[in-house]
Length: 85
Image (cartoon, rainbow, N blue to C red):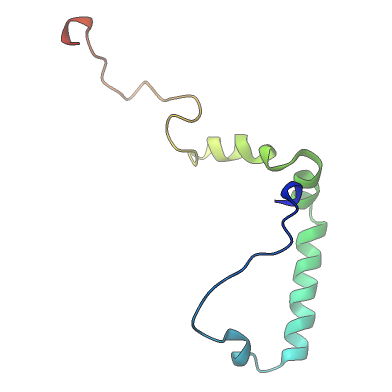
């Protein structure tokens, strides 16, 4: 997302969640700390250096890619004989 110069994400909803925050000053401080931790972590550094393609092997290893976009798993598919085509 960084290479596409994405600066934010818009979320649309019907509830005003900010009004449910009791201690707004602390909420702002804590969300700032969380954002800083996420931005300075090893995953963010790898994504900055190598882009989102660094996640491809991880996603493929857990079966997260749709079938057919990477190496297809032909071991579980029944084979069609040439005569049946």
